[in-house]
Length: 216
Image (cartoon, rainbow, N blue to C red; front, side):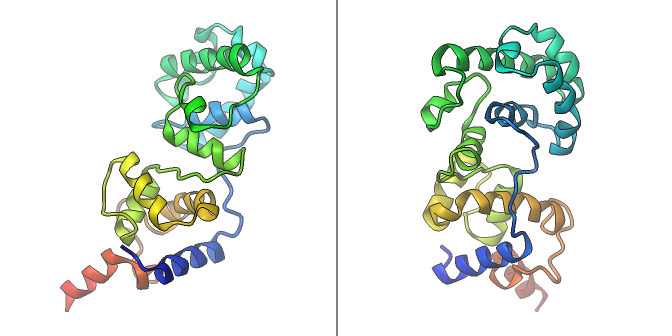
C-alpha cells in the first residue's frame, strides 16, 4: 500500500495540473447529470455533450421526460449507442423520481442505485458533484491509472477498486481526485502508449519504477 506521503504527493501534483477538477459532462439541473451519465456508458463525454442540448430542449422538464415515448427519446440519443435501453431507463428514471422522490434526485447510494439504469459509478458521481459527499467514481481511467500507480492492486473490478481507494484517498479529496484521473488519463496516462517520460507522477508510480528496473 502507498505511504500517506506518496498519496499526498500524487494528489497535490494532480491538483496543480488540474485545479478545477470539473466533470466534463455539461448539465444545468441535477437530473440532467444523472441522465448524461447514463448516456455516457460506452460512449464519450464529448459525444454526450453534443447530444444533450437538443434532448433537453425537446424535453425541458422532468415531467416531460416522464411522459415521453422512449422511442422518441431514442431518436435524440441514437449516436450515443445502445439508445433503446438508455431511452427506456431515462423515461423510467424520470417517472420514479417524480413518483417516489418528489422530482428531486435522492442523495444516498441505496436510493440512487434503486433508480433505473443507475449503478455505483453513476451514484458516486452524483453524490460527489451534486451533494458534495465522499465519492469514488471508478471508471476505466480511474481503474487503469490507480492500478498503474499502485494505489490499488491492479484489479479491473470497479467495486474492488472503489473499496481499495477508500483506504488510501481521503474522503474530502475523493470526488475531485476521480475527476482528475479522467483528465490525466486522457492527456498523459492513456490506455495505449502512456507518456511515462516526463509524467509528473512517475516518481510515485509502481509501473514506471518496475519498467526502470527492467531497463537496468
